[in-house]
Image: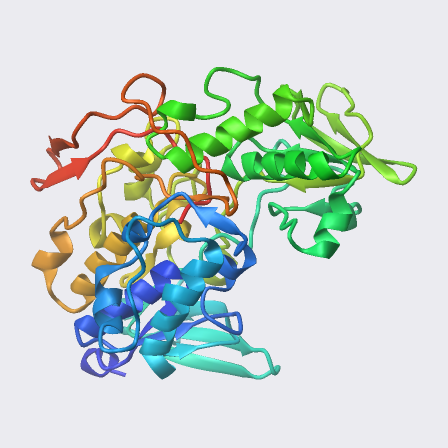
Length: 466
């Protein structure tokens, strides 16, 4: 197959989530045909798994402009920009309609198991860049398929690969054996079976981010109705002034309120904190479990464990491709220095696109949550800007690909998920705290990129984001 023939092939987008569908919308706008491969039976499978929680971001921040144009000719009605959708709202009122508007470009029950260059494994240099990609697919009916592509945009996210309970990044001893009593998701206590699982029980909650706050708040609410319900909060660090986030000074009021609810759970005795605890083993003690840290300390016996220690990218099906990833974050090297959570928050990461997301494997891009590797500060608007730039690049509009077209809002910068039924949050403070922002966005001129980029200073979002 020659280069001109390869250019007629579609662009394969892996994942029909928010960023994958936005990528397809941008490609369609440029007249480039996408094929979106979704492992689940419908759009946004991962979002559906946390449909019971509410986003920190308002509707205005989670609708992609190109997607809105694609939806305009349909019966779609844009939701109220100032409202906060739940995961189920996001799916029903935007993501599934967008997938429907894309029509048969979106293919369900199509799990990507491998991507390579046609006729070239990872080792071979000869004629590599002129060869199309070959995408290997397993279907839910047991059949297999191979699809050729001119480019691949991997928007498969990180939801399927949560971090383990073990404090060293590996499963703790006994963690796999105790799998039946361990969950890696914030529970949906509106589900009767899930509610029974935790009602009147002692549950270890491992983690210090928004998901852990959500679990603590939910279990505290459950304790009001079900005596004996208690959370043992396992923290790898100590408790400090920033443990619960920005509180009333957080420019994301919903996120600030969630941290305050977690704090209230501790103060009211519904949760007790075990600090400086890095789990190395999970041991059985009768019908209950005990967590053991690296110094031999032991937790009180618990009935259940909820491990909420972040997510990581699944790179297994990209093993025959040449990636340039940061050794710590597993994010593209050029992007990693911008998103290192030790140095940056989502408000200080300037918009980026095709240039920063490029790999030695030409026309391969990791986007969305997956592009951030293990960093926790991703937001949907960043993902939408990523795929806008990439679509422009693939269509040959290099000027548009290099142009920054994203203005981050003064508030609501770090999108994420919180409680669906959270009470109204207090007004954000005008100053002070870890999350205070200027009264108006700052305009920063970057020496590495001449464009003016509007950013709001913001504290890191400890969330899988949206």
